Image 1 (cartoon, rainbow, N blue to C red):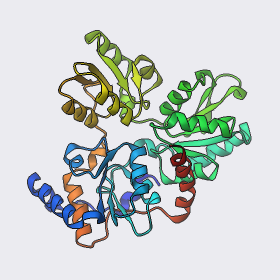
Image 2: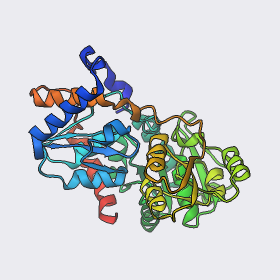
Image 3: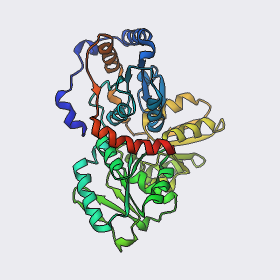
Image 4: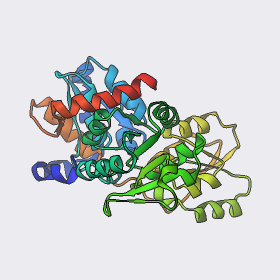
Length: 367
C-alpha cells in the first residue's frame, strides 16, 4: 500500500514533544527501554539520525534487519526505526503476538511508491503477452508488501543490495527472463555485473504501460521497472570527475542504486553493509569519497578520524523520509507502548503476508 493511503488516519505528534529538551527525551527513552527490557526491541537502519541510532538494539541494512526481525522471538514490541516498507517486512516475518511500530507513519519511501501494485499487475499481463511464461519477478526489499506478495505469487523472490547478485543468478536458473522491481539502477548494475549486456536490458515505463527497448524483443533478458532512489540518483558523473580532479588519489565507492554511469566510473560499489565493511577494513591514512546517504557518510567520517573521507556529493541531503524518525517521534512511540495505548502499529493483512512470505523466504534461504 502506498504511504499516501495511510496518512488519512495518522495521528500527529502531540505538541508536548516538540517543546521537550533533548536531555529530557533521552532520559525518558532510556527509562522506558530499561523498564520494558526484552519485551522491547529497537532495530535501526544505517540511514537513521545519530540521535536515534544511539538507542538501537540492532543496526544494519535491509537484509540484516530482515534477518534480525525473523529471529527475534522475545520482544512483544518492535519499534522499527526506518521506513514503512521495512516495518511491513518486520511485521510479516514476526509472530502474531509481536507488534511492529513505526514512530512516524509518514516515513515512507519514494522508490517503494514508484511500483504501484495495480500498475504492476497490468505490466505483468502485457509482459506475459509479449514473452509468455518465460519471466520471473524479483523485487528489491525497498518495495511495498503488495509488491513482495506479487513476486511470491509468481514464483519470484525479494533481493537486497547485499544479495542481489546471488538472487539474480538464482532467478536465471528458474526462468529465461527477469522482471526487476522497483529500482532500475540496482537491477541494471547487478545484471551487468553477472554478465548480462546492457543491450539485453529493457525498461518498463508504468505510466506509459510500455516497454522501452530498441531492437528485437526476443533478445531481452532483463526488464527493469522505471523506478529509482531519489537519494542515490543525486550522484552524477560530474561528481566523480570533480573528485578525480581535486583528489587524484582518492578512491570512490558508491551504492549500486546509483546510475550505471556513476557505478562504472567509481572504483568500487556495493551495499550499505559492504561500504561500511570496506571503510572499516581500509588502511589508516587512506582517502575515500562515498556515494550513499548523508547520515551514514557523516557517521562513517566520525568513526574514522584516521582516514580522509568525504561525500561524493557534499551538497547531498540526507534521506528525507528516513529523517522523519527523530527523538520526539521515538519517545512518543515508546510512551504509547508504556501507557498501553494503540498507535503507529504496522499490520499487513494475512493473505498479503502469506504470499509475501514466499518471496521473503526464498531470499532468506539463499542469503
